[in-house]
Image (tube, rainbow over all chains, first blue to last red; front, side, top):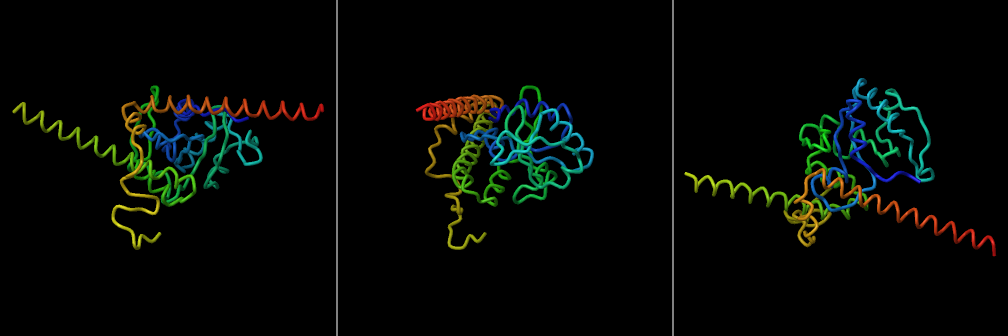
Length: 181
Length: 69
């Protein structure tokens, strides 16, 4: 049976091997405050040869195995940069839960495209790049899978709620500034 | 994807601002830090894993019982 998801450990291992990546999908949504549940960590890694080498080492350290519908415990494989460079998507199971690599998530050419608007978040001392909420939403809209249909209304509400809080904070700040003048 | 016939506030997946979604949980999540949100997800994942394992155990016990009878 696959291990339950422990994203902080996955992030720590990727950081240990200095892998450049952006957190995407349901996990990114949770980091922004979505109350939805996700069973896997989705990331988009940079596709440069050096980064793929570091990613291959990190996947080995995570004991990454290829996950399929018939083999949820995963099929062992030897990750290497050449193999990873040929992949667009790779669904893995690791010692810290399921990890999905998407090198070209729906609507995006790859890591650079997402990193441009990504936000840095600190998780237990590890800095993680998280795709912008608008980009997470856009990718889900374009992927258009049944599970995305269920999540998108919640993400729209989350984006609206974040916007309202930002407005409140800004107006609170300007009221305080006016009072102090 | 064509947006023909849809208002500015609508998407094929629902109202753009998520009207109609209960925001109680969203507001509670927004009061937490990203690390706390992750911790919460991790606890939910552990709980679901325990449920899965208990279900698998029950299924295997009942299939053993069937085999014995």
